[in-house]
Image (cartoon, rainbow, N blue to C red; front, side):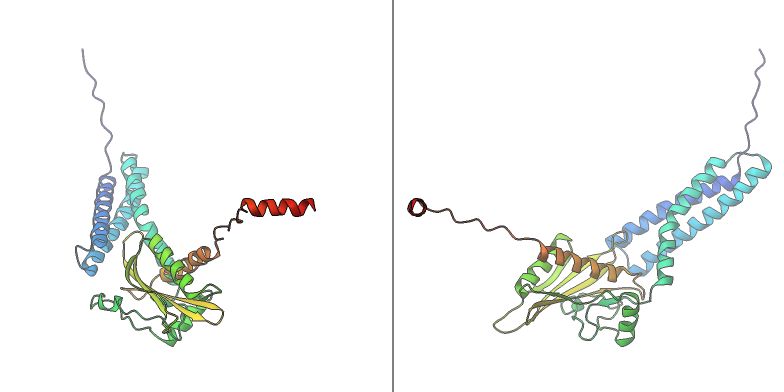
Amino acid sequence: MVRRRIAEQPTSRLAVWARRIALFSLAATLIAIIIVRSGALEIVPALSTLAGALVLAVVAILLAFAAGIVIWMEGIGGLRQAVTALVIGFALIAYPLYLGIMAYRLPAIYDITTDPIDPPRFEAIARLRPRDANSVAYAGLYTAEQQHAAYSDIEPYLTDASPQEAYAAALKVIAKRKWHIVDARPPQAVAPRDGRIEAIARTMILGFREDVVVRVRATPDGARIDVRSASRYGRHDLGANAARVRALIDDIDDVLSAPGPEKKAPVPNRAQAAGKGNSARR
């Protein structure tokens, strides 16, 4: 019996290499994210590794497109490998592309505060920041103008609650968000002193450390809450600090606006009940 050999369809080498590079880029990206979040390396080398992985993702996409043209023209195999490379490549660069659009639309600032005239100061956090991090000093009028143009809704939060209640609400929200509280000082009424909370927040994906300070100041009608959020690295926060300040104030407002426990009416004793009964008979 004669066996017939079925000739195997040749596979595009471009498609094979596109998938290999895409898989390597995916592995390198995950490793870079782990390194950045853990702080195992300095921030600059870790980000350089991440940038290199994203460049490889772009190379994989280009090779996949080239492989698709070859597959179409020559009728060879490799379509599955090319599609896999495209899916992985676009998945890796989608978020950086979104950040690039945000960087184009938003001002290049990294320090947002509800009070540009007298911004809350970083005191305890200032001693923890690395030397190569951004300055803790507020950038000044130019940054305030850019902030107002882009985030006009960022403003102080005024409440008729007492400073102690406002401070407790802010502390509750920060604790719920699981930020690392570096310093917490409640307000004082006897020797007038502002309440302040300094905490470190982390970004969702890369885990960058962002510094936050909340100041609670007494007013004639209650309290005023000012918030400041600043990135440790980079000249552009891509709107992250404004979003953080806005969300924090909204959460504090929800806590202060929540209805308290209803007061139960006192239960009358037997003597009072009897007296009411007699007066009712009269």
